[in-house]
Image (tube, rainbow, N blue to C red; front, side, top):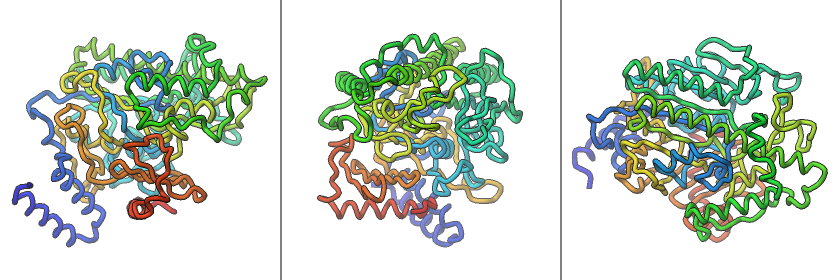
Length: 541
């Protein structure tokens, strides 16, 4: 039972929100935050066990277009000892979500909000949103960002406009890993991507430049400088690997030579079996959906291009391996500075593996690896990378929106644990403010702010609560696809031809048994919730 005082305050809040109708959306967000506290999500400050404990440093690391099974702790054969170390010394989530697409994921990750404007366009940050950088600066944190921004390359939405004291990296969506100033052949006539440090564009890069290394160099330099100041820091490290173009160092590619000669179907089977053996998935709950019906079988794909097909996956694996090596450098820096114990380190991917084939599916003239070419991994390998799920990036099925997610915080998180907590990238901002002891403002310059729509995951991370019940469903939309998860039920829409599909994720996480025909009432209920959310966020449908 909630106390009479809290009930009275909640009633008063409802009355006030009714009066200020011109701020209807703002009031709705305020009611949601209060409701989270009543339902057990906790306030932004009350869930920390000890308000006097030193506030943690926070590092958020994100891969780009990486599949659910592409790291060792999620069943991969790719060498990722440093990422696996984070999982082994922390907690591993099995039900964490992104938005299934680069831009919309970054908008939600940075703001704690679902994308507005229906997710259309890159400029999704608006004046009535607060970013992670801005929110943590208000909590007296130092802030830094190194990597792929992809949330605006013009004022007022560049990283240094939106709360990051130091920033370095790609403002756009993808670039040449060895020379970001090379024109992007995906666009007619070529297009140079915007790359900058703080407010200065960079157009010249040294001969030995490689983005994954450079982002890490800058992150380490920023962390060292900010540690010397003596205040806690937040660093956002979104790598571009393993997003196309497939660029990797020859010595890294050589480590995977011949490992994928049996093809994508065999790779998916081996990863699935490894996931079962690890206890990561239960085949009763994760039934194997089998080969992707939209893809070639490996036998059919074996032809004169088989060497090129192998090289695609070898290069992709090399990119993931190189990213892992650089994450190891970050972890070593924390050890060197003697701050690892009270630093919260998180790792995830921005969406599922990418099936896109810019420039054509079989353009074997584009050799994966060197900087002269612009290659991609394609749908056949992408389906294997997302094992055990269906589909991939840009879809609202689990293959598009499920992300590997691990977190290490030795001072608070018990090592070697797994969590079934359902989490989403909209939870980062409330979680970080909770850890930082910060408060989220309701206004900026006298104008109302949209308040975070996620919950603090601190109780689930630290083990004080095993499962936090989410007070509202989770929603997705991208380019016509739709999704809503309410408890264990998920409604998903691929296109008008497929219509709504209904799955019970407690028994069928891999979405193999469509319940829509047998449960039309539930389909209608969830569809109405999705429509209400779509109207709130300006989705056109």
